[in-house]
Image (cartoon, rainbow, N blue to C red):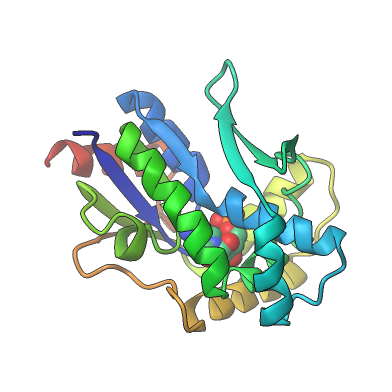
Length: 221
Ligand code: DC
C-alpha cells in the first residue's frame, strides 16, 4: 500500500518548499495540488471567462484536461490541454483566479479524482487545502502547516524581491488576508484543519526546522 502525507494550510505558509523537501527525503512523489487549480484559473483567464460565474466556469471544465508529469529532477510539471504551463501559473493573478474557481464543485470533483488516482499508485506528499479532509481522509500523516499573516506576507515579499519582482508588503499582506478569507469561507471543501491533523506553526521556525519537525511526525507513524 502506498503511504501518504497530507500537508494543508493557508497560502504562503511554505507548504510547497517543505512538502518538496519531505518527499525528497522519504523518496515519495510530491504532488502540488494548488498547481492544478492554478492551471484551471489560467485557462479561465485566457478565455476571459467571468470567474465569479459559477455556471460558465463549471461548463468550461469539460474543455479542460489537466495532467502532471515529473522532469529529470523530480519537479512537478503541470499540463493544461497538453501545454506545459508550470511557469505561467506562478503569478499572483493566476493564484487569485485559482482561489475563485476552486470554489466550484465540478472543478473540485475533476481535480480531486486526479489527485486520488495519483495517491493510489505511489507514495505521496500532497499539499493543498483539503487533502487531509477530503482528498486523502485516510492519509498516514496529516499536517496543518501555518504561520502568522505577517510572517507569510513578509516571506512572499522577499520571494518576489529575490526574483527581481517589485512587491509592496502592505499590498501583499492584504492579498494574503483576502485569500485566507476566500479559501476558509467557501461552501465546498473550505480550508480547515482536519480533526486528526497535527498543527505545525512555522512562524518561528526555519525551513530546515520545519522539515525536521514534519519528518519526525511522519516517522512516528
Ligand atoms: O497553494 P496555491 O496558492 O498554489 O493554491 C492556489 C489556490 O487553489 C488556493 O488559493 C485555493 C485553491 N486550492 C484548493 O482549493 N484546494 C487545494 N487542494 C489546493 C489549492
